[in-house]
Amino acid sequence: MQIDTSSPVMITGATGYVAGWIVKDLLEAGVTVHAPVRDPDNADKLQYLNRIAESAPGAIKYFKADLLSEGSYADAMAGCSIVFHTASPFRIEVADPQKELVDPALLGTRNVLEEANRTPSVQRVVLTSSCVAIYGDSADLEKTPNGVFTEEIWNTTSSIDHQPYSFSKTVAEKEAWKMAGAQDRWKLVVINPSLVLGPGINPHGTSGSFDLVRQLGDGALKAGVPDLRIGAVDVRDLSRAHIAAAYLSDAEGRHIVSGHNTTFLEMAGTLLGKYGKDYPIPRRTMPKWLIWLVAPMVSKGMTRKIVSRNIGHPWTADNSKSKRALGVTYRPLKESMTDFFQQMIDSGAFREG
Image 1 (cartoon, helix red, strand yellow):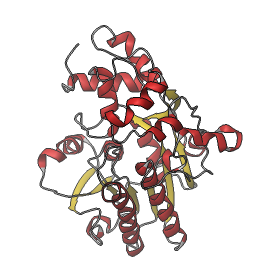
Image 2 (cartoon, rainbow, N blue to C red):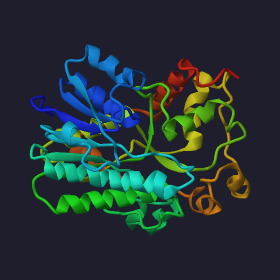
Image 3 (cartoon, one colour):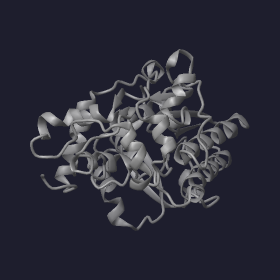
């Protein structure tokens, strides 16, 4: 794959978990990256990207912008041939799902793509969507052809009241395809990752992935984990998928980027050999009836409907298009989990138990 370094690219959410690795890989390939951020003078938040840029052949330039402010991406996008839109909040527990999830996802996507329409240099937009734009609950697998999630399937079961994060990603991606179809200058390519794992550029990241892995080591899940079957992908493999989607001329459509059909227990199990003596890593699953009973008291985001439709249900996705069309290779789950967990130890995320 030939990476064109002759023109800059823009990436939203540059300080985020996924985008951080995309920026790193682009800088190391010699690309100039335009990074719209809320505060270009916030040296503390930008320190990790700046550290990478110092020794990379590429360059990073910051621009002041706000995801929900119309027209705020004009300066950052000017002259860019490729736009990566990764910015979208990943939180399960929210007080106002419309304001905290749907608006940033939907209106943010609309603002970015409207700016692409106004920027003649833009030739391609790579959108970070999610597997949850394909399915809402694991139980949805029962209604799929051949019992597997594919790029042809859309989430039809989520709403503002049930799985609002999944709903936000679904409506945002649908809006992106609608806007892409209304013009013919730039091309939209979509990446649909499953649960993202692996070390972050910022070791103190705030993504929900950090929260989950932290709970595997801080004792919160010592009694056991839910029997939740999910997909998982390493953030470093996901970055390479985005870059392939940007620079491979024949890349098109949606791409499930998920390295493993796995479970919470299997994820925890990859850590036992190295860390099991020193940290309270869970070794068993909790009964579904018990989770159903206590879930609403433990977490506002974990309703009994979510428990019923996800715990104990199988989860299988077809990642063959990502391998075939984008050339993605997936590292072992144990490597992703070990690297992630070790980073948390090194950054003081929890004390030894």
